[in-house]
Amino acid sequence: MEYDVLNVTAGFLFFSGVFLTLQDDVHQKYAGIAYISSATLLWLFMPVLDSAVLAPIILDGVPHSRYADPTLQALILTAIVIGLGILAFASVLGLLFREMFTHFGRRRED
Amino acid sequence: MSIEFFAALLILLPLGGAAVTGFATAVGGRYGIIGSEWITSVIAITLLAIDVVVLLAVRQSGTPVVISMGNWAAPFGIVLVADLLSLTMVLLSSIVFAASFLFSLETVDNATKAKFFYPLFLALVAGVHGSFLTGDVFNLYVMVEIMALSSAALMVLRASPQQVREGWLYLLLNIGLAAVLLVALRVTYTSFGTLNMADLAQKIAQHPDEPIVGLLVALYMIPFGIKAALFLGYFWLPGPYAAAVPAVTGYFSGLLTKVGVYVIFRLATLIFPSQQNLFPILLALAVLSMLVVFLAYSETNMRRILGYHITSQIGYMILGIGIATDQAYTAVVFYIFHHVAVKGGLFLIAGAVEFVAGSSDLAKVSGLKARYEALGTLFLVLGLSLAGVMPFSSGMVAKWSILRASMPHVQYVAVGLFVGLATLLSMRKIWNAIFWGKEKMVETLYLPLPRSAFAGIAILAILSLALGMPGLGATNLLWTIAKEATAMMQPEVYIPAVLGGT
Image (cartoon, rainbow over all chains, first blue to last red; front, side, top):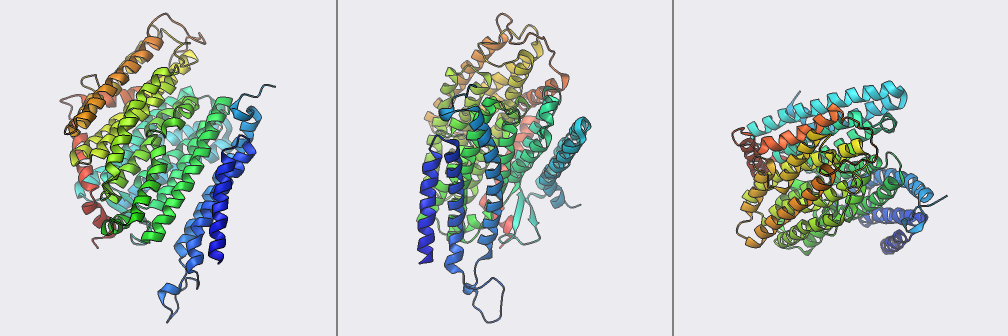
């Protein structure tokens, strides 16, 4: 159930992210790429939820298939950090872009 | 001081240098910049020396150096794999970095240098070296992101409107490609349970007919095909390369797209050699990319013209990968070596033209030959080498070896020769407009070209000449190394070396 909800959420995030990225406005473009990044991370996280039963600390007498996979969580953490860094730089660049250009990439004349 | 430590230094040195020079530039003011220059020059020379040492050691032992970061064995921990292909690429990167660094010394003004020019450049080098040396697909993603972020920051260093527009689009594109790459990694991990390249190759070789493998091919080819500026992915390239600070475009043109080519090379030879559908697609992309040379004809800016030539030259490399014989792979290694040196040199010449004449627009500048004769000679050498028509230069040897490897398919040889001719015409256009004719400049200051900048270009031109000169032995040496690299990247050698013979 929660798996389906997450699937649909990630799908909608992808959809609106792509839609917004194709708009002319810098804010909407920026929101679009942020949505796409989040959707990817959410989708990356789903296999963990699918199998998550026990924290991955090995105990006696527990079959190995019952543990959640720690690798994917490490991957997501790395991807979040990198994605956030790039989005921070993109926000600065987007603001500069908005100051210099109107929509459609035309030069803003003061 | 084991050889593993030296190989890891190829990434750690530029990364540490980025931190140190960043600190120096931030607190040291003018002296900080001078200090950064010294540190960067030491790093550039050390990188070259270390790479040669590791390359010789790997040649002697005949197996790749495998470094397990964090001391976890191969399929579980992250490994760096320094085989001959990676080390050749890193050597190239170090040479072009040294040349670009020399060029940047006098041509980049202090205000730009104070905006963290050297730290960003070193971080870019660390990202490029990391992408070449990594043996883990997730680590590859991390390194590609380091590269994307630092190259985007270098592109907008002066924050002129042109740079901001191109840099913003470049960054958006790279964020999108990162998302596709993450999806590829998730599919890889959930279907094969590994992110190690050697382990992945082994597992895909056991199940070559799974439909998911076809999806994986597409998911990896899309981001790296666009990063390599293959056909239909070339649209992003000429704009940013014409806008960035000239001193770094030499390195950009040589190495950024070559990371894409390198990854496609690895995918085709190591991970997906069982996917027979991949190779006809590569051949079709190669021919279409080679024909992109004609888009350069409508451009009037020297750097934009050269930008379209990158795509066309990458077509030759992908052609060799698509032909998929050992001879073709050897030719591809040789071709990449030739191309990076020559294209880097040509972009630095475009930068030099902008430095002395104020612009590299064909309509605004002409007649530089009279006052800057040496620069014109260097352009002649590199331009003719790029077209592959100059005897005793690397271009002739490289193009000839690629075409000889594709000899069984006459149509590719025909396209290759035709595109070579088209390249020559395009170089003639630049030569006629910028170096011949009446002297005309945007700023008539008659600035002499700084010696260090000239030396940077000359290194790359001499490298191109040395690689094609019979009797020097450089051609044979590189050809032997390329042959050994081809033998070493075969799955039968690569996988046991990484996984420890299991």
